[in-house]
Image: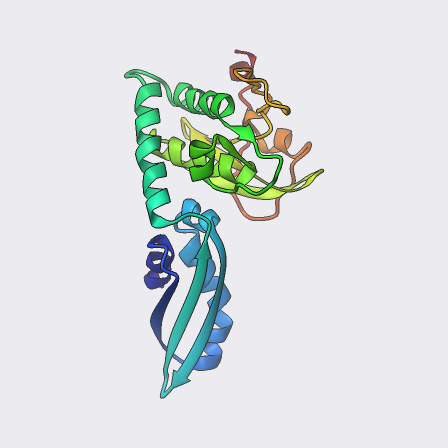
Length: 229
């Protein structure tokens, strides 16, 4: 249902959709339809704060009224897009490999964003504007910048020893790898100090202290050499 994806992408606080089919069928399908609409774009999925819907049906047609709250306004998301392109243009040089592009983005985020210990800043906008965010903000900003650099990326979610957590997957030369800019940023913040402990890890390496149940692209290969720089 493309209308769901478009409604969420446009940050509409309320939108309506029409569904041809029985009420019971729609009720059963709605959770899957919402997930399909959201995860056409990971950025949209993780900017959404909450949603609810009502269904009214008559004569084989249903009207869905969706209400949603977002962590970023459309203007803030547009500002993230503008600044991301600007930063990526300053980092990426002709002839750089995909790994070099990912590494430059990883290191920029670690150097310029600090972990939000108040646990109130969840967005890429706050990561750029306030230079502070929790893991979700780090992952959103990395997703935006990696995508702007022409790399295929995902936002992953799961759990670590401290609770829920978000990080990224990035595709380098055809193979997927995990990248956790939050855990590579020293706490307390130490300015330009950058770790690459969680840069381009395999599933096996990442599962040592990260767990996830959602289906993500497999990351079978490790690139330990790039973490020694």
